[in-house]
Image (cartoon, rainbow, N blue to C red):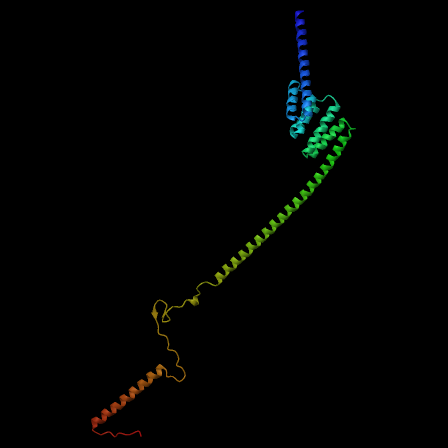
Length: 269
């Protein structure tokens, strides 16, 4: 019996402790709301976090903390708090409010696809809310416009890419053409070099016209006499003839002297 009494006592103390934590958590939420209304958002955030530490499943604390994060433009933190709110919410109204606010956060971040999904979930929990319906339609319109702009941008990027590829192909063709012309020119020059060697057999002449071969000296025939001139052979013949005539005359004189017959001189005039 004492054992049961002890268990009952422990149960009562546990119930009182839970009730005390819940009450303290509620009081912290109230204090946080007052600070939030006074635009003391940092202090309000601190009170909400204290409340969550005492009651981790209090959807009201998560929801109001998300509103405070939204007011100070901490959108990433706000979206997480609203997600925790709808996860711990016990009614459709709480879920609707959490998804609606989550959609507003995504709209601020210009994440229209996520905003459309959040507002759609909000309407599932409360299809009659006009503000949510309006935000949902606006998010869809902005998303469609964004997709159109993205498609247009993709088309322009594709055109630019195709243009660059065409330019690259054109450049490759020109480069290939230049290489072909260069190769053709080189082949032509190489062919000319084979057909026209630097030294032809008939061009190999000695520098000294009197020398030919391996040093053998040969006399060249004298050039022909010009008109009106006597050639060296003719001069030589005349000289020999004069010498022979003079020799003959001398022999005759000598013969006459030997006979003692005086010679009779003649004048040419």
